[in-house]
Length: 633
Image (cartoon, rainbow, N blue to C red; front, side, top):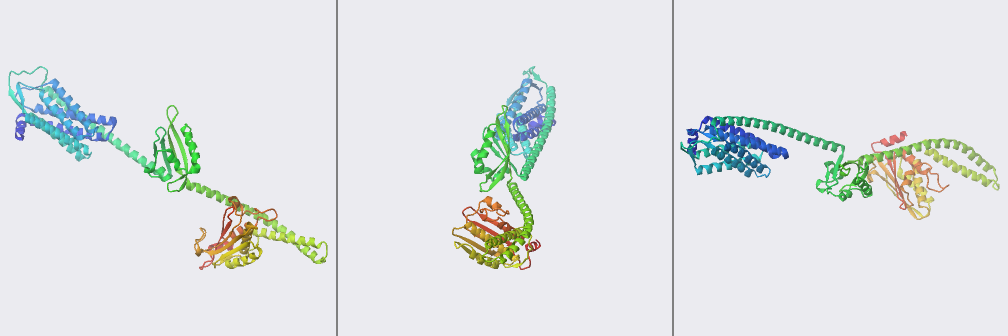
């Protein structure tokens, strides 16, 4: 068959036109494949436009290839072409090829669609061949006809499958080669199937196209193919470039937006109020401690993430948005699946339809836990600063008043004692003078406390053995506290301190005395513990191994949080009138502060209180920085 085909082409065809037909076929098939490949990834009108352009280029190029080859056919007889069948063959090529491309792309059946395109090539060829008019009888070799159709359909199916597999150039070139082979094989094997028997009695009808006119039509079609192919390719390249550019810009914008949201810590949750669908951003998932697979599209799931104490507030704001009112910005607490509590700041916006009804809600969240904690710390620092300023002002005032009062009390006490010495023991006014002396002495002691509080006394600082000071103070206190109160001590040997032994002794006496007053007439215990940093973790304000700790714990009535906040304020007391001055703990606070230490208080009503003192110790390397600072105070 190959020998017959070669002989037919060489003897009955103009090889120059055959080569031209092959070139037109290659150009048309390559252009059609370049339009068909991007149509796979396109959608909507763009896919339809690409498929239509590909079908038009392919159908016209197949038709042009066929009739250029027909013009190359030289049977030795006058030839003309039926106009209706010639036009019909062009329509068949375009329409059936378009149906094949629809089947390949829309139905995702590339082999079946390619075979349909092969059917379009075969139908166009044999309808076009049937348009030949010459003074001869035409018979067909059935084997060649079946072979041509089979090769055309199979090779076209293979070409469509290759084009479907990928957009790489190797796929496009291979698909083009298969389409060209299918068209050429079908045409020339089909032409080899023609057997002519000259018959002068066969007339050529009037409704025919002369070869010269057909050549003009084919030339116009060739030019049209080239212009259509080039235009389609240019348009597709531009569309493809714009699509890729827009996709790249969109990806870049999304990446930048995600980066900005991640840096700023802002997440978003969009809810469709009609369908209930919810879309969480990656940053929102991070804020709430969720994975994308954990999210449920229900309000109850969202409410389960809200702190129980804040759910009512959040529900109220959500209900407002359901009725078309944009909720104001507000803060509330959330609980992550890990149990961690965070504080979030939320702002929402509603999207309304034409009738003013809300259709979707867009909410943004920002984790403000650290900022909230910073605000609380700032408030605490402001409170401490105000407290310190009050202490300083009161200390200055108290120091001035105490100095003048002390000068006033000196002659009263001295003259009262002299008068007491001059009075006989049986004098009626002696008891009155003794009352004046005792009252003056109590006033003098009060002035001493005020002077100590106002830091007007001169301090003598030296190495102090706090364990010894504590034992001495407890020995004295055991004799003064009621027998119903038991004093327990756990005193360890600790590094020495740099300070004033007398003031530290006063601190212990004041704290134990306050503990005894808290217990009152009930049975109770006061536990005094002293240990060094080697026995427990050091305070955040001290270095490990450089601190001494003293705690005094009682089983008394305890204090609430409001009382704890004010216990170090001067003249603040919970005792009755005449039972206390409110300066004891203020003096303790001033002494510990001057020694570079800290005081922490733990207490609850009915559970007693615990005061823990942290004081800097002298290290082996020499005097610590805290002691130096204390010495300079």
